[in-house]
Amino acid sequence: MLLGTNKRSKDAAVRFTSIDMDQTQDMENGQILQLQQRIMDDQDQDLDHLSDAIRRQRELGLLIGDELETHAQLIDETEEMVDRTDERLRQAKKKLDYVGRKMKDNKSVCIVIALIILFFVLVALFR
Image (cartoon, rainbow, N blue to C red):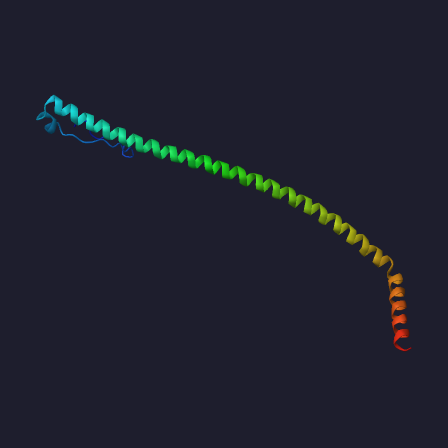
């Protein structure tokens, strides 16, 4: 067969236009040349389609790369904000722990203040 299939391996799939030798024997050289030209034109058209598909894949890959870069920047910014917020929360917790310790240490002072306030409230009510 002229320009037949390639039988290198079972998995290799190479597509050629099959032309029987019987077909070409009845053709004149000009007709064979036209047939070969048509086959080459078809192959050129297939290559153009493949080139377009590869170009679209490249553009898509570039867009995905840009999107990933944008997301990486957003993640970095979010990480910085989380770190700042975490530090502020730690400082607030330290202050609350300090106040809690002082309240425990000054429990008797708080009780005295509460009793004084209660005393004034009772005096105001029974007047």
